[in-house]
Amino acid sequence: MITERAPAKINLALHVRQRRPDGYHDIETLFAFAADGDVVTVEGAARDRFAIVGPFAAGLDAEADNLVTRAARAFVEAFGIVAAHAITLDKRLPIASGIGGGSADAAATLRALARLHAVPLDDARLYRIAAALGADVPACLDGRTTLGTGKGDALVAIDGLAGTPLLLVNPGVAVSTAAVFRTWDGVDRGGIGEGDLLARARAGRNDLEPPALALAPVIGAVRAVLDAAPGVLLSRMSGSGATCFALFDEAGACAAAAAEARARGWWTLQTFLT
Ligand SMILES: C[C@](O)(CO)[C@H](O)COP(=O)(O)OP(=O)(O)OC[C@H]1O[C@@H](n2ccc(N)nc2=O)[C@H](O)[C@@H]1O
Ligand SMILES: Nc1ncnc2c1ncn2[C@@H]1O[C@H](COP(=O)(O)OP(=O)(O)OP(=O)(O)O)[C@@H](O)[C@H]1O
Image (cartoon, rainbow, N blue to C red; front, side):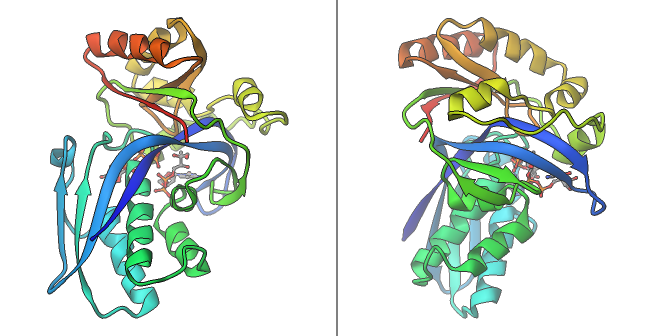
């Protein structure tokens, strides 16, 4: 049995540059990853099976359009695999929440199947399958801290902030990525600057935060709690929301802010950057 972690993805900054003719948007984003997330297990089986367990299992159907089964089908097709697989997804991240849960699951499924069938992880076909599954999936397949351009699928590795205490807070409102992009005001406010990662992130923005806030006003309350927390280095919404994150100077401050957020009934994940 192969077990692959599907870490939560954070956009330390996300600048939207322009709408493209294909309906997608050109973005510049700083991708980073948490030490925790969903977990995917894969093993050989007599027939294909897929099960979802874990705290957020109820929010998803184990049906054909799950990103895990779509990833598995694309892998089997691309590599001419005849074997069947039993796949289990331990769904620990909230659904449609801006931390790439589905994208991370698809990427973890590809990595697990590649390991099971001795496909090298740098095989270009894996990247192509990932890019066809979603804009975020290549970044999740790579799993390192990267600068993403294009749809977010052209990646350059950058130095990360490994070990930095990280808090994720989700107020329990699902937000559609497509709806948030549609609500963006169309103004190009410029690309991501130079410097070390924390400086670049702090000088940056999430251009999807205003449109997400318009669709889910509770995001403002989450940001206010995180901004006011002692020891915060940076607080921002991730992806298309509604999950917001904060980086802290030490783990105790992160724990205190997590307690504040939980007291308001919000989902939290206290972890660190990898
Ligand atoms: C916002 C981010 O989370 C930032 O990391 C990602 O760009 C979204 O990545 P994702 O969830 O993998 O996105 P996809 O499943 O490919 O796209 C969902 C929808 O979001 C919109 N979309 C997504 C990415 C992008 N660069 N431009 C877009 O306009 C499109 O309407 C698309 O139909
Ligand atoms: N394994 C999966 N996990 C989560 N969502 C999935 C999965 N498979 C399919 N989906 C569908 O994909 C949609 C987006 O879910 P996901 O959690 O990936 O969004 P997100 O966190 O906003 O991602 P991103 O940050 O990439 O925009 C959901 O509405 C859900 O119906």
